[in-house]
Image (spheres, rainbow, N blue to C red):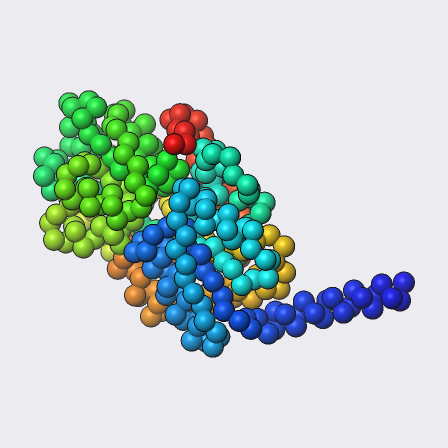
Length: 318
């Protein structure tokens, strides 16, 4: 009994010491999407600030493919020591489990929530060449030209796809889905008029909206936003329409709870900085941090919500 107790105490003190000294070597943040999008932007802001305070390298690695499952799988199979993180959008946890092809990991059990980091403002835009200037006109145009309009997404299980499917379902219209490997190539085709609608993150769209190359028809927030007061919410035309996309940080399951707690606190410190918030707000990124248990609750609720839509719209993996 004494020997067992001594061993338990040694293990306990070892865990505490590991959290106190963490990090003692480089930390890797895996982003399962290409550079340039909101997840990549936030990861690099985090890396820069954490590296300065920790005096350890914090490296961002873009590991794309498989509807973000390739990057998530790599993190899930990493050593549970706290040195490999996943910064990923909600679809990895609440959409992919329904439609992704068989994977060798389970995002709901093989990854542990650390904290939510942001809510991403989504905007509904069309090319300047499309003869519509409002959500109402877009719906009317789609009904008058059935099967002629295309909408883009970052893949079958992406929030862009789910947003557009929800829009179609509530508006009673049908468009063609064109999947891409990321926002950048989709927006390029949108600007060229090869696709006619995109619902996506504001940071990649606002520059083109300001230049007049894209028309901003609405936001996916439940009501108008203070910094876009002249932009109607889609819900003003389709009551109840809302897409609240989030990003979170995760680690492999079995990472010591004290390391999860420490990282949660450090990320909250960085993202709570008014200068950091001010830097990202114009890009439509609302920084939000929560406890691991709060993020776990959000995952459970969204898993049920999006699962219902996936079944109703008969969305399947490609």
